[in-house]
Length: 331
Picture (cartoon, rainbow, N blue to C red):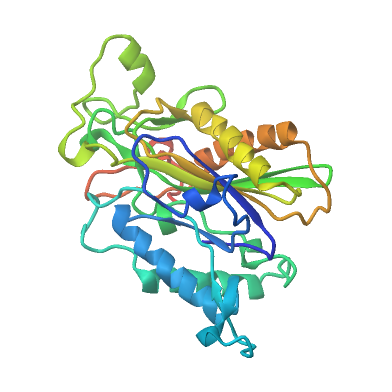
């Protein structure tokens, strides 16, 4: 859950071949509404989009939303009908655990309440920022709970993914990212080495999926549990710069370069989607090229942080980065 300060402008870039999304058409630059009240990242495949209804309900209870007219159509009414704008994206994790247990509207509402509570207990948060001022937990939580990576050679050789965050500040401009990593490909470090991804036949070491493909190794057929739309990296980039809706859309597109730095290969079967938010609290317009470069970098860092913080599972056999490096799991 990302709760937005008043006046936050939103954009989106849907680059994956099998996305699961909500309200992305509304974010297109030529369409009328430019404000966003919250962004939801969730698991549960298309079923998980139900959680957005609970987010809307909570926001409406707080009096947050786009005013669309007086209640009952009576101009004398001072109470307004408000429609919260809540874009959302889902990742596929139904194969892990009980596939009938999915995020619901109640889940979305609870996420808002938790975020709001975290903000009220965080000294750095204030009414002028948002509930999102609180530092989120990383790893196998939230939308990252069922996330996995390295699935090109099948689920049996995959590893645990997760959700990660990162931020950069240059001058008075800050760009941050929150990314749930559920890719078919491997996650790479800054030197191009595999942090987490497909394992060897004996499952004791990591292979480099892209190198293996280029050397002629063929992946398992993407059928059954690995059919179209069963993997996705989704996320949000946010800046305090003042941007137009068109610029926010550009920012979301530029942020996707971070995926190609940290995930390899990026496939047509991933439903990769990134949202961009601009709060404008810095008070001035930033250079979109510089902000875009920052966004790509924080997306790559957030992806790496997500797998570094992930916790492995014994059943099914889904180790995390920590299990291969002798580190405490879920650091």
